[in-house]
Amino acid sequence: MTRSPHEGGCALSTVEKHLSRLAWSDVWAGFKQLLPISLFVVVFGVAFGLAAAQTGLGDAATLLMSALVFAGASQFAALELWGEQVPLVPLIITVFAINARHLLMGATLYPWLRELPTARRYGVMLVVSDANWAMAMQALNAGKPGLGLVLGGGIALWSAWCLGSWLGLHFGNAIHDPVSLGLDMVMGCFLLAMVLGGHKSLRMLMIWIVAAGSSLLAYWYLPENSHVVVGALAGGILGVVWMENKHER
Image: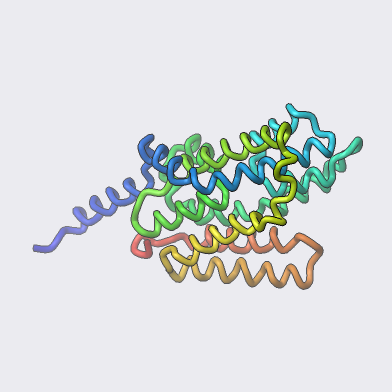
């Protein structure tokens, strides 16, 4: 017995709603799933808190930056430009360049995020980082709901980053150089493992190829740090233009 087109459309709609689900149970599960990797985030938060204190940034400003910005690499870069006279334009450009990869993350999550109301959509994106994005994409490409991983996992990582920043202000001398311990490679290796282990599709492959290729060209021929922006923009634009067909998921 064959299914009518109408029945097939209803079944597909149910699948779409399932993948775009954002229930509190999913958020809590995502929070618990990202707790182990959050321990490494605490360590880097400690290093940032110590660096901020040594730079002369006040406790309240340090904690506010970690709570509102929630971007370790760009926060460390901001400290390099901090002083009595802060160069605002270079600071903005630097932070944008380092965080430009979020354009690519948003583009890859958009097929599922677009099913959410606008407020929820941008609320989820507020806590997107490398780790919870990678795990969410792996779940979504396997046909499982992933937005709870983004939000719940993001809350776990954000809490760990804020906690680490506070600890660093008061006890930072205990871990003053996480790079010497190899901890700077943890998040990068985690992200690479998630990407390589995820579902493969022509669309995702081409997005990564375009992002990597354009980033390399920019690294060779354009000013310093511009490769981050160029790679993220190229991959993000392709992800938006080449929308994923439902049968490709």
